[in-house]
Amino acid sequence: MTSPTIRSGSRYGSGDSLTDWLLAHRRQVSWALLALAVAIGGLWFYQRSRSLKQQHAETAYFQARQAAASGNLPLAVSELKKVATRYEGTRGGTQAAMFLAQNLYEQKKHKEGIAELKRILSSAPKDFLASIHTLTANGHEELSEFGPAAEEYKAASTATKFPGEKAQYLAAAARAYTAGGKTAEAKAIWTELAADETSPGAAEAKVRLGELSAKPMST
Figure 1 (tube, rainbow, N blue to C red):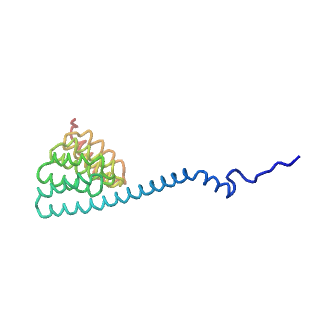
Figure 2 (cartoon, rainbow, N blue to C red):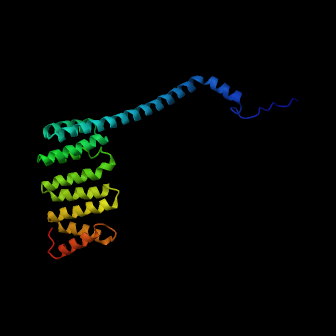
């Protein structure tokens, strides 16, 4: 009886076996490599395009600011609108929209400025959110809309990652609530700030709480 032949290694355990498999499946391997190359190329192209868009947005934003610096507000508004719309979601586009809102505020067009800020809120880079909420609050205050202003300041306090800024935004919200006659809401914020001795707003918070406690609360 002859002894059975024992093959060393698994089916693909040797170089010859792997070579044979690659030859047998060369079409599938070629397509897989092509797909990988396309995916890598597409990713590079996307990142490159995004980088160029960011650069173009920054350039367009600073060019639009030159129109504002010349004192021609109507032209500045027109150019800033173009940049803010075309490059929405980029840093340059977001800066253009914010500067556009400020220019609209200077022309007493606070509602239009607020609307522009609301438009970009969902697409803006996260590190701009606190500033956008604050600028929106400024517009509401100019319209004596103190309740919405306070809510925007509170949103800014949530958006920022800096404790000092958070306290400043909360204090601004409390002042807006007070200006709008919402002393209960203001007192709640001042109480929160006063409880944190390390907060830069703690000292003012204690003073404001004393002022609010000295007069009847309104709703």
